[in-house]
Amino acid sequence: MQRRKLPLVVTLAAVAATFALGQAAPIGSAESANQSAASVPDFSGIWSHPYLTGFEPPASGPGPVKNISRRPDGVGNFQQLVGDYTNPILKPQAAETVKKHGEISRAGVGYPTPSNQCWPGGVPYVFWDFLVQIFQRPDHITMLYRQGNEVRHVRMNQPHPAKPAPSWYGDSVGHYEGDTLVIDTVGIKIGPFAMVDMYGTPHTEKLHVVERYRLVDYAAAKDAMDRNAKENSHAGAAWDFDADYRGKVLQLQFTVDDEGVFTMPWTSTITYRPAVVPWTELICAENPHQYYAGKDSPIPQADKPDF
Image 1 (cartoon, rainbow, N blue to C red):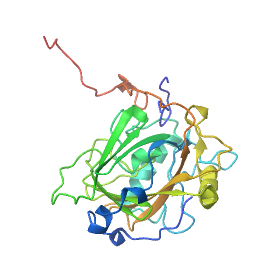
Image 2: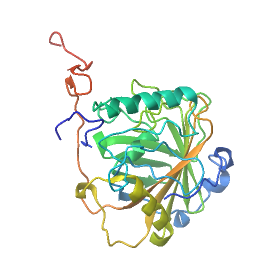
Image 3: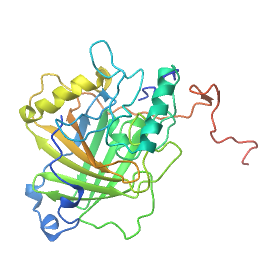
């Protein structure tokens, strides 16, 4: 799609926080490793969550930054991203960063994000994406996201290295707790557009994200989906699900902790339903003109031929 003078171009609920980051079973525990293949839930397939900006607010407790710019129907206005910098999860410097991004957006000018700059988003930023495809193996899980074909690799029943090398999606290790897939991620690299959401909320090298995936009944997830519909803009039919579907849904509950940015851990959810459209193949290509600054982009330039 053609880039526009907006915060982001689309080339593109929650349950309460009931666990603390330190309460998960030890990564790579014998109990997790010995879980029989028959008892492992099947998360494979293409899952859809076509909402912007994506994060579902929790029913209670600390949650993500939300958009204070609203459409007439009360839903967050994706055409103007103004993060609530008064959210108590934000430390003063982080709040000021969110406030500055909102001021830019209110002025009718876009600002750079990983999405509109074709940059790896990391977690939890990438959770905004409309589609995720999951490939499960006993020792490894691969997650493919639609935007720019971003890929995550999760090692199962393995510990983090003592000093993980920073990478765009961090070092992710997983294990099963009964019917729940738990993924623990650290070591997320700091890039030029490092943020945990589309409101510009920053993160540091201390960012720690724990994800918990479960297949739940539609009725059990209905409250989360209703909260999502009140908060996030539906992105359209190109990435949609069957509105009449009432089977199992895939619910991701994630907790974010970063003592350099946040005053406390906070939790959000993403509730996926089976996608009804084929996987869309997209390539995110750099735009030589910065629509948010009116000048050329600092993309790689070849001043002379390579050969």
